[in-house]
Image (tube, rainbow, N blue to C red; front, side, top):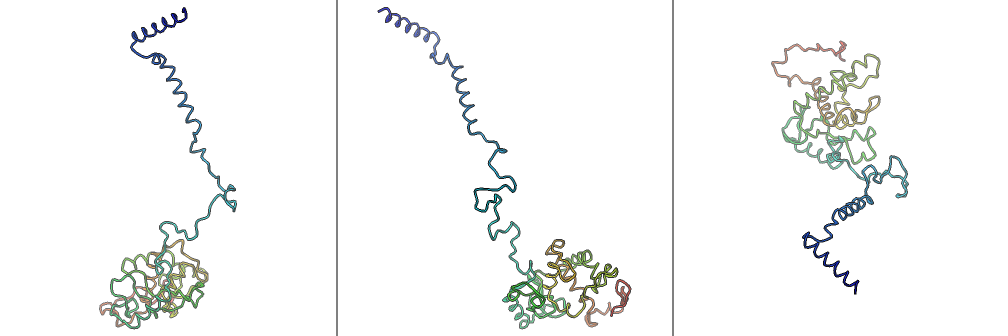
Length: 287
């Protein structure tokens, strides 16, 4: 009986305290509860914490057991092309035309005979303002590239006989500038192969005014600039594609400048003195 009475008194005291405080008993222990919860939250993320510098990765050249070849650096998927390096325009980037393109151009040149003059003073089947300009001065579809050791599929690809874009005064000006920088030291300022280093003993290149090179398609010049030829190294790393075509256009202009018929010269220009006086830049007479 004494124990029952004691328990009743304790409950009565508890109810009295609750009534006096106006809040539950567990709220009285709130600081302890908050500390326990904070401790739990601090321990929880520590079990899965992983900094960027600690992420799983392979160091350079470290072997891998994941792949059968043991290499951690994976090769690119076959056919992968870097962004901006998709070379869809075959004529522009290679200076070549497929056999079908060459035959079509040859047929168009031989049958259409449009009235648009090209840089050789002949006619071209390409309308003025088109996307290509025929300034080769030789039979379209010529296979000079295959005769001179072109690629293995040369039967399907031939040196282009047209430019991939219209030739304007700006293009020729750019071509002259690039030619003077990269080509004149060997080929000379007028293309006779009498550049400065040739006069110092370097191997003399052929003259652009030889009939063989006057008849060569423009794609041949593009291939030589891109891949080199004989003693000439390739200039693919130094000269961008656009500038290669500009240089070729200027070479054509040089060839025309030395093969002008009197009937093609305006009358007011006939009696004007020529700056070169019939001599090369080195002072020697041209033969």
